Length: 262
Image 1 (tube, one colour):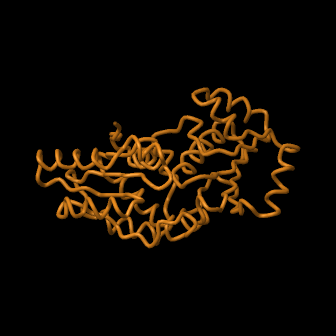
Image 2: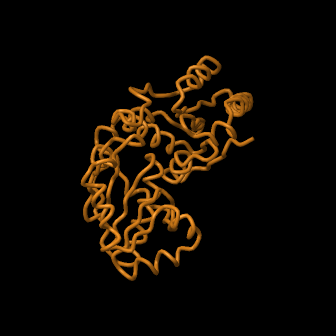
Image 3: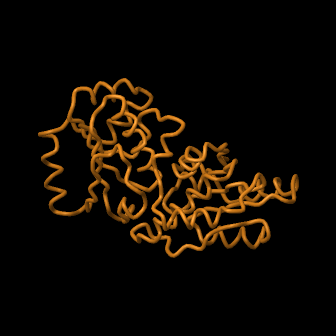
């Protein structure tokens, strides 16, 4: 039995769950998921994705719920508990996770891509019909001239420092100069950057209005999922440094990823 507790942002959770899906398949263990709800993400798994057949159950839990705090003290009595720091120490050593899982009753609390995934692993994630329809509508006219641009801001200091807006602006100008038919699908959590680039490249940018940028608002997470999958439908993604969102979009779409980095 493998129990994985997922936290942090949407893309972080998806890559950790993708790893767990492949690991559980290899060791032929049942997979159970704890989906943590809190300030980093407050939207239930079932409001984002259709059920994944190889997951035995998904439980949505409140991070600061009294029952959850009590259960966290009990987990080590019944499981081999592996927290994020230990997961990080074994990255690039998949045999360690295989050994742990084969012993049985493994619990992991992580947001990392800790185990190698297959080309089609992310195909297991299927947005709920409402969100899938929004994705299909927005991306219906994407073609070879559509380039994905992901600008990560918010609380990600490394992205802000190493992937400044000027880099994206220069890249977009260069692409347009080479091919005036180039368009960009812009995904960002920065309204200021979106407004600036739309004013700068008005006829070349496609984006989706956001209902909220607050991660503790379920609408913000659903909007982010639509952005993620539209981004994945671009053959080329110009993404942000230290961003799992850029990484996972490329993995979903099997797209080329170029990271904007000083």
